[in-house]
Length: 276
Image (cartoon, rainbow, N blue to C red; front, side, top):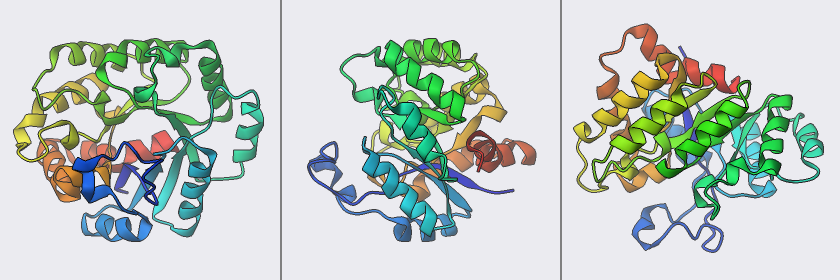
């Protein structure tokens, strides 16, 4: 049974490009590379990881692919490509040479247009991903969930995965609107969910394991054991409990699962989704 961390990042810190890393986030204002992560994975019994884009550029995709090529522990890459580009087909054709490139992501949560993912040109891009067999990671806030549902429904054969449970307001312990919209999205069998990025949505300094239970119940029940996967969101998780804290919360929740269910959650679903 492989254990896979389906969501982490590498970067060479650049204050202009990485301006989202504010003063409160000093601990992640530095470079993070495979040499920093691979020992952490080993300590936590994780066999490999999927590196996900943090910057919207072709350079970012190539940077991640370079590190994946040099490090067998990096099993897959979720890069960035301009889904609205006129030469998208050509670019995707070019990327076919990289076995470890599994899919793409766009930082939808930062787009001024909340319905960006429903724009015809963007949807045309999603259709191209489907044609070339690439996955798509959905990075959004709760208010975008209804649009994500329309996107997923429009492309029933495209594999989507929701990142970070769509960042529910765990700190305020609000659940109702997010729960309803998440359940609606999960009805689409082509959508998976990453159990990742939760600790940074809670109170960074004083969260308790039980703060997450109700949210985990929602996604495990809505998506089912075959469509959920573990992700650490390292190094961002260092803001609120680190790798160990993340593992502690998720392990304590997963204790009640059978051995088969645990194997699916900790690795098999990620292997199947990304084709690792």
